[in-house]
Image (cartoon, rainbow, N blue to C red; front, top):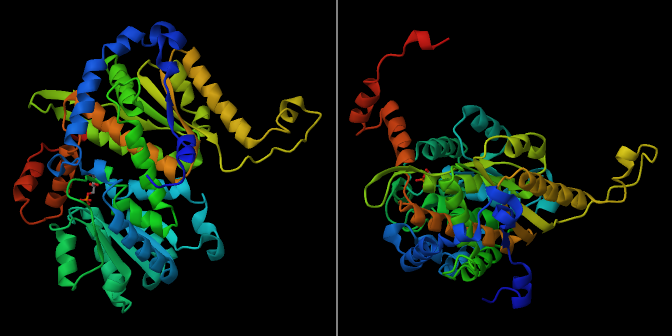
Length: 477
Ligand code: PA5
Protein backbone atom coordinates (compact mmCIF):
# COMPACT_ATOMS: atom_id res chain seq x y z
CA UNK A 1 0.00 0.00 0.00
CA UNK A 2 2.97 2.28 0.58
CA UNK A 3 1.34 4.64 3.10
CA UNK A 4 3.31 4.69 6.37
CA UNK A 5 4.14 1.32 7.93
CA UNK A 6 1.88 -1.72 8.23
CA UNK A 7 2.12 -1.46 12.05
CA UNK A 8 0.99 2.16 11.95
CA UNK A 9 -1.89 1.36 9.60
CA UNK A 10 -3.05 -1.48 11.81
CA UNK A 11 -2.79 0.73 14.88
CA UNK A 12 -5.17 3.17 13.15
CA UNK A 13 -7.84 0.61 12.28
CA UNK A 14 -11.43 1.73 12.82
CA UNK A 15 -13.38 -1.04 14.53
CA UNK A 16 -17.03 -1.90 15.03
CA UNK A 17 -18.26 -2.86 18.50
CA UNK A 18 -21.84 -4.15 18.31
CA UNK A 19 -22.12 -5.72 21.73
CA UNK A 20 -24.89 -3.29 22.66
CA UNK A 21 -27.08 -4.65 19.86
CA UNK A 22 -27.11 -8.14 21.34
CA UNK A 23 -29.25 -10.10 23.78
CA UNK A 24 -26.30 -10.32 26.17
CA UNK A 25 -26.50 -6.56 26.82
CA UNK A 26 -30.07 -5.68 25.82
CA UNK A 27 -31.94 -8.76 27.05
CA UNK A 28 -35.06 -9.42 24.98
CA UNK A 29 -34.59 -6.09 23.17
CA UNK A 30 -31.36 -7.32 21.57
CA UNK A 31 -30.54 -9.71 18.76
CA UNK A 32 -29.83 -13.33 19.60
CA UNK A 33 -26.98 -15.00 17.81
CA UNK A 34 -29.54 -17.11 15.96
CA UNK A 35 -31.41 -13.99 14.76
CA UNK A 36 -28.22 -12.48 13.38
CA UNK A 37 -27.08 -15.76 11.82
CA UNK A 38 -30.37 -15.88 9.90
CA UNK A 39 -28.98 -12.94 7.83
CA UNK A 40 -25.78 -14.75 6.87
CA UNK A 41 -26.87 -15.84 3.40
CA UNK A 42 -28.54 -12.48 2.51
CA UNK A 43 -25.41 -10.72 3.71
CA UNK A 44 -23.24 -13.04 1.70
CA UNK A 45 -25.33 -12.39 -1.43
CA UNK A 46 -25.00 -8.62 -0.86
CA UNK A 47 -21.25 -8.98 -0.47
CA UNK A 48 -21.04 -10.91 -3.75
CA UNK A 49 -23.29 -8.40 -5.56
CA UNK A 50 -21.06 -5.50 -4.53
CA UNK A 51 -17.86 -7.39 -5.28
CA UNK A 52 -19.03 -8.54 -8.73
CA UNK A 53 -20.20 -5.07 -9.73
CA UNK A 54 -17.27 -3.08 -8.40
CA UNK A 55 -16.12 -0.34 -10.71
CA UNK A 56 -19.06 -0.69 -13.11
CA UNK A 57 -19.85 2.79 -14.39
CA UNK A 58 -23.24 1.77 -15.77
CA UNK A 59 -24.31 0.80 -12.23
CA UNK A 60 -22.75 3.91 -10.67
CA UNK A 61 -20.27 1.78 -8.81
CA UNK A 62 -17.14 3.53 -10.03
CA UNK A 63 -16.58 4.88 -6.49
CA UNK A 64 -15.19 1.51 -5.36
CA UNK A 65 -12.08 2.09 -7.48
CA UNK A 66 -11.34 5.68 -6.47
CA UNK A 67 -8.72 4.69 -3.88
CA UNK A 68 -6.73 3.00 -6.66
CA UNK A 69 -7.16 4.75 -10.00
CA UNK A 70 -6.32 8.41 -9.40
CA UNK A 71 -2.54 8.60 -9.18
CA UNK A 72 -2.11 11.18 -11.94
CA UNK A 73 -5.19 13.16 -10.89
CA UNK A 74 -3.92 13.34 -7.33
CA UNK A 75 -0.58 14.75 -8.50
CA UNK A 76 -2.35 17.31 -10.66
CA UNK A 77 -4.63 18.28 -7.75
CA UNK A 78 -1.65 18.69 -5.42
CA UNK A 79 0.09 21.00 -7.91
CA UNK A 80 -3.05 23.05 -8.50
CA UNK A 81 -3.76 23.27 -4.76
CA UNK A 82 -0.22 24.52 -4.14
CA UNK A 83 -0.76 27.34 -6.62
CA UNK A 84 -4.17 28.20 -5.20
CA UNK A 85 -2.70 28.37 -1.70
CA UNK A 86 -0.07 30.80 -2.94
CA UNK A 87 -2.27 32.92 -5.16
CA UNK A 88 -5.68 33.26 -3.48
CA UNK A 89 -7.02 34.66 -0.23
CA UNK A 90 -10.34 32.82 -0.46
CA UNK A 91 -11.51 29.47 -1.84
CA UNK A 92 -15.24 29.08 -2.40
CA UNK A 93 -16.97 25.84 -3.39
CA UNK A 94 -20.23 26.36 -5.29
CA UNK A 95 -22.19 23.12 -5.21
CA UNK A 96 -24.99 21.33 -3.42
CA UNK A 97 -25.82 17.85 -2.10
CA UNK A 98 -23.08 15.40 -2.97
CA UNK A 99 -21.03 18.24 -4.42
CA UNK A 100 -20.90 20.09 -1.10
CA UNK A 101 -21.39 17.82 1.89
CA UNK A 102 -18.09 15.99 1.34
CA UNK A 103 -15.96 19.16 1.21
CA UNK A 104 -17.77 20.56 4.27
CA UNK A 105 -17.26 17.30 6.14
CA UNK A 106 -13.51 17.02 5.40
CA UNK A 107 -12.94 20.71 6.19
CA UNK A 108 -14.60 20.36 9.56
CA UNK A 109 -13.04 17.00 10.34
CA UNK A 110 -9.42 17.76 9.61
CA UNK A 111 -8.96 21.50 9.91
CA UNK A 112 -8.84 23.79 12.91
CA UNK A 113 -12.42 24.33 14.10
CA UNK A 114 -11.95 28.09 13.71
CA UNK A 115 -9.82 27.84 10.59
CA UNK A 116 -11.13 30.97 8.90
CA UNK A 117 -10.52 33.04 12.03
CA UNK A 118 -6.87 32.03 12.28
CA UNK A 119 -4.24 34.51 11.10
CA UNK A 120 -2.92 33.78 7.60
CA UNK A 121 0.44 32.66 9.03
CA UNK A 122 -1.29 29.83 10.90
CA UNK A 123 -3.79 28.93 8.20
CA UNK A 124 -1.25 28.66 5.40
CA UNK A 125 -4.11 28.49 2.89
CA UNK A 126 -7.03 30.60 1.72
CA UNK A 127 -10.16 31.15 3.81
CA UNK A 128 -12.65 28.46 2.93
CA UNK A 129 -16.40 28.59 2.23
CA UNK A 130 -18.87 26.08 0.81
CA UNK A 131 -22.07 27.64 -0.49
CA UNK A 132 -24.65 24.88 -0.58
CA UNK A 133 -27.81 26.94 -0.57
CA UNK A 134 -29.45 29.72 -2.52
CA UNK A 135 -30.63 31.69 0.43
CA UNK A 136 -30.03 35.22 -0.92
CA UNK A 137 -29.00 36.46 2.52
CA UNK A 138 -26.24 33.89 2.63
CA UNK A 139 -24.96 34.90 -0.81
CA UNK A 140 -25.05 38.58 0.11
CA UNK A 141 -23.20 37.88 3.34
CA UNK A 142 -20.56 35.79 1.56
CA UNK A 143 -19.95 38.64 -0.84
CA UNK A 144 -19.46 40.93 2.16
CA UNK A 145 -16.51 38.89 3.39
CA UNK A 146 -14.69 37.83 0.22
CA UNK A 147 -12.98 39.82 -2.52
CA UNK A 148 -13.94 38.17 -5.82
CA UNK A 149 -10.69 39.02 -7.56
CA UNK A 150 -8.75 37.30 -4.75
CA UNK A 151 -11.05 34.27 -4.72
CA UNK A 152 -10.78 30.92 -6.43
CA UNK A 153 -14.29 29.59 -7.14
CA UNK A 154 -14.63 25.83 -7.54
CA UNK A 155 -17.92 25.18 -9.33
CA UNK A 156 -18.90 21.57 -8.69
CA UNK A 157 -21.76 20.02 -10.60
CA UNK A 158 -21.93 16.75 -12.44
CA UNK A 159 -24.87 17.85 -14.58
CA UNK A 160 -24.07 21.54 -14.76
CA UNK A 161 -27.85 21.91 -14.70
CA UNK A 162 -28.51 22.22 -10.99
CA UNK A 163 -30.36 25.51 -10.52
CA UNK A 164 -28.69 26.36 -7.21
CA UNK A 165 -25.13 25.91 -8.41
CA UNK A 166 -25.68 27.51 -11.78
CA UNK A 167 -27.43 30.55 -10.26
CA UNK A 168 -24.41 31.01 -8.00
CA UNK A 169 -22.10 30.63 -10.99
CA UNK A 170 -23.99 33.37 -12.89
CA UNK A 171 -23.61 35.73 -9.94
CA UNK A 172 -19.89 34.99 -9.69
CA UNK A 173 -19.40 35.30 -13.45
CA UNK A 174 -21.03 38.73 -13.38
CA UNK A 175 -18.92 39.85 -10.41
CA UNK A 176 -15.66 38.68 -11.96
CA UNK A 177 -16.49 40.24 -15.31
CA UNK A 178 -17.38 43.57 -13.68
CA UNK A 179 -14.14 43.44 -11.71
CA UNK A 180 -12.23 43.00 -14.96
CA UNK A 181 -11.03 39.53 -14.01
CA UNK A 182 -10.55 36.83 -16.62
CA UNK A 183 -12.91 34.07 -15.50
CA UNK A 184 -10.34 31.48 -16.48
CA UNK A 185 -7.96 32.79 -13.82
CA UNK A 186 -10.35 32.47 -10.88
CA UNK A 187 -12.66 29.56 -11.68
CA UNK A 188 -12.17 25.81 -11.64
CA UNK A 189 -14.90 23.38 -12.69
CA UNK A 190 -15.46 19.88 -11.39
CA UNK A 191 -17.91 18.19 -13.72
CA UNK A 192 -18.68 15.39 -16.11
CA UNK A 193 -15.94 14.56 -18.63
CA UNK A 194 -18.05 14.85 -21.75
CA UNK A 195 -21.56 16.09 -21.07
CA UNK A 196 -23.24 18.84 -19.14
CA UNK A 197 -23.38 22.61 -19.20
CA UNK A 198 -20.10 23.27 -17.42
CA UNK A 199 -18.34 21.36 -20.19
CA UNK A 200 -20.09 23.59 -22.75
CA UNK A 201 -19.26 26.76 -20.80
CA UNK A 202 -15.64 25.71 -20.51
CA UNK A 203 -15.42 25.05 -24.25
CA UNK A 204 -17.01 28.45 -25.00
CA UNK A 205 -14.53 30.25 -22.77
CA UNK A 206 -11.62 28.49 -24.41
CA UNK A 207 -11.07 25.91 -21.69
CA UNK A 208 -11.54 26.49 -17.97
CA UNK A 209 -9.36 24.35 -15.73
CA UNK A 210 -11.65 21.38 -15.10
CA UNK A 211 -11.56 18.22 -13.04
CA UNK A 212 -13.64 15.23 -13.95
CA UNK A 213 -16.42 13.84 -11.82
CA UNK A 214 -16.11 10.30 -13.19
CA UNK A 215 -19.02 8.68 -15.05
CA UNK A 216 -19.67 5.94 -12.54
CA UNK A 217 -19.52 8.13 -9.45
CA UNK A 218 -22.72 9.72 -8.13
CA UNK A 219 -22.70 12.94 -6.10
CA UNK A 220 -22.98 11.38 -2.67
CA UNK A 221 -20.22 8.85 -3.42
CA UNK A 222 -17.87 11.51 -4.77
CA UNK A 223 -15.87 12.72 -1.76
CA UNK A 224 -12.85 10.62 -2.78
CA UNK A 225 -12.72 12.01 -6.35
CA UNK A 226 -11.80 15.62 -7.33
CA UNK A 227 -15.11 16.86 -5.84
CA UNK A 228 -13.67 16.33 -2.38
CA UNK A 229 -9.96 15.98 -3.11
CA UNK A 230 -9.37 19.44 -4.61
CA UNK A 231 -10.94 21.42 -1.73
CA UNK A 232 -9.21 19.10 0.75
CA UNK A 233 -5.82 19.61 -0.90
CA UNK A 234 -6.33 23.38 -0.90
CA UNK A 235 -6.87 23.10 2.85
CA UNK A 236 -3.61 21.19 3.21
CA UNK A 237 -5.37 17.91 4.05
CA UNK A 238 -3.33 14.79 3.30
CA UNK A 239 -5.40 13.49 0.37
CA UNK A 240 -3.09 10.53 -0.18
CA UNK A 241 -3.85 9.58 3.41
CA UNK A 242 -7.60 9.81 2.77
CA UNK A 243 -7.31 7.46 -0.20
CA UNK A 244 -4.95 5.12 1.66
CA UNK A 245 -7.45 4.92 4.52
CA UNK A 246 -10.24 4.09 2.07
CA UNK A 247 -8.12 1.36 0.46
CA UNK A 248 -7.26 -0.02 3.90
CA UNK A 249 -10.94 -0.26 4.89
CA UNK A 250 -11.67 -1.84 1.52
CA UNK A 251 -9.16 -4.59 2.34
CA UNK A 252 -10.57 -5.00 5.88
CA UNK A 253 -14.04 -5.46 4.35
CA UNK A 254 -12.95 -7.85 1.63
CA UNK A 255 -14.44 -10.76 3.57
CA UNK A 256 -17.72 -12.47 2.69
CA UNK A 257 -18.55 -13.35 6.29
CA UNK A 258 -20.50 -10.64 8.09
CA UNK A 259 -18.77 -11.65 11.33
CA UNK A 260 -15.47 -10.47 9.88
CA UNK A 261 -16.56 -7.58 7.70
CA UNK A 262 -17.52 -4.44 9.68
CA UNK A 263 -19.36 -2.72 6.78
CA UNK A 264 -21.37 -5.86 6.08
CA UNK A 265 -22.16 -6.39 9.76
CA UNK A 266 -23.29 -2.79 10.26
CA UNK A 267 -25.53 -3.13 7.17
CA UNK A 268 -27.00 -6.33 8.65
CA UNK A 269 -27.54 -4.70 12.04
CA UNK A 270 -29.37 -1.76 10.46
CA UNK A 271 -31.49 -3.92 8.14
CA UNK A 272 -32.37 -6.34 10.95
CA UNK A 273 -33.29 -3.39 13.17
CA UNK A 274 -35.38 -1.83 10.37
CA UNK A 275 -37.27 -5.10 10.05
CA UNK A 276 -38.17 -4.69 13.71
CA UNK A 277 -39.55 -1.22 13.02
CA UNK A 278 -36.47 0.78 13.91
CA UNK A 279 -36.96 3.35 11.19
CA UNK A 280 -34.67 5.99 12.64
CA UNK A 281 -30.88 5.76 12.47
CA UNK A 282 -29.12 8.22 14.73
CA UNK A 283 -25.53 9.11 13.86
CA UNK A 284 -23.90 10.51 16.98
CA UNK A 285 -20.23 11.46 16.82
CA UNK A 286 -18.56 12.37 20.11
CA UNK A 287 -16.41 14.90 18.34
CA UNK A 288 -17.05 18.41 17.06
CA UNK A 289 -14.72 17.61 14.19
CA UNK A 290 -17.09 14.85 13.09
CA UNK A 291 -20.29 16.87 13.35
CA UNK A 292 -20.53 17.24 9.59
CA UNK A 293 -19.57 13.64 8.94
CA UNK A 294 -23.04 12.96 10.35
CA UNK A 295 -24.50 15.35 7.72
CA UNK A 296 -22.60 13.64 4.94
CA UNK A 297 -23.72 10.23 6.21
CA UNK A 298 -27.34 11.36 6.41
CA UNK A 299 -27.36 12.20 2.71
CA UNK A 300 -25.62 8.95 1.79
CA UNK A 301 -28.02 6.79 3.81
CA UNK A 302 -31.24 8.68 3.05
CA UNK A 303 -30.80 9.34 -0.66
CA UNK A 304 -29.42 5.87 -1.35
CA UNK A 305 -31.94 3.76 0.56
CA UNK A 306 -35.14 5.81 0.44
CA UNK A 307 -36.78 4.12 -2.57
CA UNK A 308 -40.23 3.08 -3.72
CA UNK A 309 -39.36 0.33 -6.18
CA UNK A 310 -37.31 -2.86 -6.04
CA UNK A 311 -34.78 -3.74 -8.71
CA UNK A 312 -37.34 -6.10 -10.25
CA UNK A 313 -39.93 -3.33 -10.49
CA UNK A 314 -42.08 -4.19 -7.46
CA UNK A 315 -43.46 -1.33 -5.38
CA UNK A 316 -41.87 -0.86 -1.99
CA UNK A 317 -41.28 1.97 0.45
CA UNK A 318 -37.99 1.36 2.15
CA UNK A 319 -35.28 3.33 3.90
CA UNK A 320 -34.41 4.49 7.38
CA UNK A 321 -34.55 8.13 8.47
CA UNK A 322 -31.06 9.24 9.48
CA UNK A 323 -30.79 11.76 12.28
CA UNK A 324 -27.69 13.72 13.15
CA UNK A 325 -26.84 14.19 16.76
CA UNK A 326 -23.72 15.47 18.48
CA UNK A 327 -22.17 14.13 21.66
CA UNK A 328 -22.12 15.54 24.24
CA UNK A 329 -24.26 18.51 23.13
CA UNK A 330 -27.32 16.40 22.37
CA UNK A 331 -27.07 14.49 25.63
CA UNK A 332 -28.80 17.56 26.98
CA UNK A 333 -31.61 17.44 24.44
CA UNK A 334 -32.24 14.43 22.18
CA UNK A 335 -30.91 11.66 24.42
CA UNK A 336 -34.03 11.93 26.60
CA UNK A 337 -36.05 10.80 23.57
CA UNK A 338 -33.54 8.12 22.65
CA UNK A 339 -33.66 6.49 26.09
CA UNK A 340 -37.35 6.81 26.92
CA UNK A 341 -39.23 7.45 23.69
CA UNK A 342 -40.43 4.89 21.16
CA UNK A 343 -38.27 1.85 20.42
CA UNK A 344 -37.76 3.01 16.86
CA UNK A 345 -34.07 3.92 16.75
CA UNK A 346 -30.60 2.52 16.31
CA UNK A 347 -27.86 4.82 17.58
CA UNK A 348 -24.41 4.73 15.96
CA UNK A 349 -21.81 6.27 18.23
CA UNK A 350 -18.57 7.52 16.70
CA UNK A 351 -16.04 7.39 19.50
CA UNK A 352 -12.47 8.67 19.53
CA UNK A 353 -9.88 6.79 21.55
CA UNK A 354 -7.63 9.82 21.41
CA UNK A 355 -8.50 13.47 20.76
CA UNK A 356 -6.06 15.96 19.30
CA UNK A 357 -5.42 17.33 22.78
CA UNK A 358 -6.30 16.50 26.38
CA UNK A 359 -7.10 19.97 27.80
CA UNK A 360 -6.47 19.56 31.55
CA UNK A 361 -9.15 20.82 33.92
CA UNK A 362 -7.44 22.78 36.69
CA UNK A 363 -8.21 22.24 40.38
CA UNK A 364 -10.45 24.89 41.89
CA UNK A 365 -13.61 25.56 43.88
CA UNK A 366 -12.26 23.15 46.51
CA UNK A 367 -15.06 23.97 48.96
CA UNK A 368 -17.71 22.91 46.49
CA UNK A 369 -17.35 19.13 46.02
CA UNK A 370 -19.94 19.12 43.19
CA UNK A 371 -17.49 21.14 41.10
CA UNK A 372 -14.12 20.28 42.68
CA UNK A 373 -14.27 16.61 41.59
CA UNK A 374 -13.67 17.73 37.98
CA UNK A 375 -10.29 19.31 38.80
CA UNK A 376 -7.30 17.16 37.90
CA UNK A 377 -9.18 15.38 35.11
CA UNK A 378 -8.99 16.39 31.46
CA UNK A 379 -11.70 17.40 29.01
CA UNK A 380 -10.71 14.33 27.02
CA UNK A 381 -11.54 12.14 30.03
CA UNK A 382 -14.79 14.02 30.50
CA UNK A 383 -16.03 13.61 26.93
CA UNK A 384 -14.99 9.95 26.91
CA UNK A 385 -16.80 9.35 30.21
CA UNK A 386 -19.91 11.02 28.80
CA UNK A 387 -19.69 8.91 25.66
CA UNK A 388 -19.45 5.73 27.77
CA UNK A 389 -22.30 7.01 29.96
CA UNK A 390 -24.58 7.50 26.94
CA UNK A 391 -23.81 4.02 25.62
CA UNK A 392 -24.58 2.70 29.11
CA UNK A 393 -27.81 4.70 29.48
CA UNK A 394 -29.08 3.60 26.07
CA UNK A 395 -28.21 -0.02 26.75
CA UNK A 396 -29.76 0.04 30.22
CA UNK A 397 -32.96 1.38 28.63
CA UNK A 398 -32.94 -1.47 26.10
CA UNK A 399 -32.04 0.77 23.15
CA UNK A 400 -29.96 -0.59 20.29
CA UNK A 401 -26.64 1.15 19.87
CA UNK A 402 -23.25 0.34 18.50
CA UNK A 403 -19.91 2.08 18.37
CA UNK A 404 -17.35 2.72 15.69
CA UNK A 405 -14.07 3.15 17.53
CA UNK A 406 -11.64 5.57 15.91
CA UNK A 407 -8.06 5.42 17.26
CA UNK A 408 -7.55 9.10 16.44
CA UNK A 409 -8.83 11.49 13.81
CA UNK A 410 -6.57 11.90 10.80
CA UNK A 411 -6.84 11.62 7.02
CA UNK A 412 -6.25 7.86 7.14
CA UNK A 413 -8.99 7.15 9.68
CA UNK A 414 -11.40 9.57 7.98
CA UNK A 415 -10.79 7.74 4.67
CA UNK A 416 -11.64 4.48 6.46
CA UNK A 417 -14.89 5.87 7.81
CA UNK A 418 -15.97 7.18 4.40
CA UNK A 419 -15.33 3.88 2.68
CA UNK A 420 -16.92 1.90 5.49
CA UNK A 421 -20.14 3.93 5.25
CA UNK A 422 -20.16 3.72 1.45
CA UNK A 423 -19.77 -0.05 1.54
CA UNK A 424 -22.35 -0.35 4.32
CA UNK A 425 -24.81 1.62 2.17
CA UNK A 426 -24.09 -0.47 -0.93
CA UNK A 427 -24.56 -3.72 1.05
CA UNK A 428 -27.77 -2.46 2.67
CA UNK A 429 -29.15 -1.42 -0.73
CA UNK A 430 -28.32 -4.85 -2.14
CA UNK A 431 -30.10 -6.50 0.81
CA UNK A 432 -33.14 -4.32 0.17
CA UNK A 433 -32.94 -5.19 -3.54
CA UNK A 434 -33.19 -1.55 -4.62
CA UNK A 435 -31.21 0.80 -6.84
CA UNK A 436 -28.90 2.39 -4.25
CA UNK A 437 -27.36 4.82 -6.68
CA UNK A 438 -30.24 6.75 -8.26
CA UNK A 439 -32.33 9.59 -6.78
CA UNK A 440 -35.59 10.01 -8.72
CA UNK A 441 -37.17 11.86 -5.79
CA UNK A 442 -34.43 14.52 -5.90
CA UNK A 443 -34.73 14.78 -9.68
CA UNK A 444 -38.49 15.43 -9.37
CA UNK A 445 -37.82 18.51 -7.22
CA UNK A 446 -35.22 19.77 -9.69
CA UNK A 447 -37.70 19.44 -12.58
CA UNK A 448 -40.47 21.24 -10.68
CA UNK A 449 -38.06 24.13 -9.98
CA UNK A 450 -37.19 24.34 -13.69
CA UNK A 451 -40.91 24.47 -14.54
CA UNK A 452 -41.67 27.15 -11.94
CA UNK A 453 -38.88 29.36 -13.28
CA UNK A 454 -39.92 28.91 -16.91
CA UNK A 455 -37.09 26.73 -18.24
CA UNK A 456 -37.66 25.66 -21.83
CA UNK A 457 -38.90 22.10 -22.21
CA UNK A 458 -40.81 22.03 -18.92
CA UNK A 459 -44.23 23.28 -20.02
CA UNK A 460 -45.87 19.91 -19.25
CA UNK A 461 -44.40 19.96 -15.76
CA UNK A 462 -45.64 23.55 -15.34
CA UNK A 463 -49.14 22.49 -16.40
CA UNK A 464 -48.97 19.61 -13.93
CA UNK A 465 -48.10 22.08 -11.17
CA UNK A 466 -50.78 24.55 -12.29
CA UNK A 467 -53.43 21.83 -12.27
CA UNK A 468 -53.16 21.36 -8.51
CA UNK A 469 -56.45 22.22 -6.76
CA UNK A 470 -56.74 25.75 -5.36
CA UNK A 471 -55.68 26.01 -1.71
CA UNK A 472 -58.54 25.90 0.75
CA UNK A 473 -58.39 29.10 2.85
CA UNK A 474 -59.89 27.13 5.76
CA UNK A 475 -56.62 25.25 5.98
CA UNK A 476 -54.61 28.45 6.35
CA UNK A 477 -55.06 29.63 9.93
O1 PA5 B 1 -26.02 12.71 -4.59
C1 PA5 B 1 -26.49 13.27 -5.56
O2 PA5 B 1 -26.53 12.74 -6.69
C2 PA5 B 1 -27.06 14.67 -5.44
O3 PA5 B 1 -27.04 15.12 -4.14
C3 PA5 B 1 -26.25 15.63 -6.32
O4 PA5 B 1 -24.92 15.64 -5.86
C4 PA5 B 1 -26.81 17.04 -6.26
O5 PA5 B 1 -28.17 17.03 -6.61
C5 PA5 B 1 -26.05 17.99 -7.18
O6 PA5 B 1 -26.09 17.54 -8.50
P1 PA5 B 1 -25.06 18.07 -9.59
O7 PA5 B 1 -23.70 17.56 -9.24
O8 PA5 B 1 -25.52 17.53 -10.90
O9 PA5 B 1 -25.11 19.56 -9.55
